[in-house]
Image: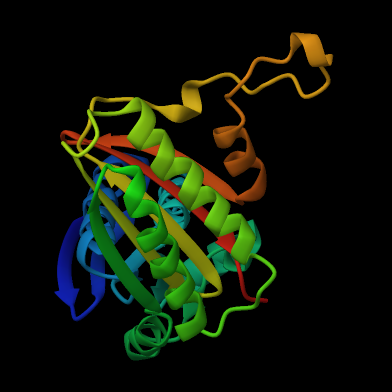
Amino acid sequence: MKVRVEMLEITSLVIPEGRLDFAAAAHFEQRLAEALDVAGASGAALIVDCAWLEYVSSAGLRTFLVTARAAERAGVMFALAALTPAVREVFELSGFNRMIPLHADRGTALEHAVSRAGRKARLVVLNEALQLPALTRFLQEFWADAALPAGPAQAFELALEETFMNVVLHGAPAGSARVEVSLHLSGGQLALTVEDDGPAFDPLSVPAPDVSARLEDRPVGGQGIHLVRRMMDEVSYRRVGRRNQLRMSKRVES
């Protein structure tokens, strides 16, 4: 099986040729993961042009499912285009056509990607508590410019404050590290990402508080990340090079 990867504007385009069977699945999954990393860094979509894909087995379907889940976590649009009748039948019989968008041709998929590229914004500040008002204004201005509904706004303000202040209070010494906050609105989903170059720390590793405990048994503190996890649809952490990255997302448009 041959696999080509191209970058078209904001889209990583993967073009497989031949049979996607058990023997080819691991290599193809790796190429999809590489293309997804590129899309997450510099684009907004990952599209697989299946015009030259002759055959797909269950092992091949697994690679698409794994990639679709990873793309959703990364806030990247994932879609397939130009499926042959034989390949489309496998997707329809397995129900994958209801989980992964399928487009008639590459052009239609690319147009859809551009229309869903969404809105992005980024702000970098030092890890100092006095920067919190600037971050809150950044979020509120983004919200107003995008004309988002008021309902989910408080959840994002709370997530931003809790995450940023966690970096300030428990990360590198105040004023010694950069904190990058980015927002990406796409397909009705808003992703808030907070990165800092302080010591490695996964806030999601902290055990959730016992919300049923008695007053005298409840520890002071430790509520922030619990609130974030409950108010967001998805929260994930990873160490990227020498930086902590916490990504939170929630649907804000119907």
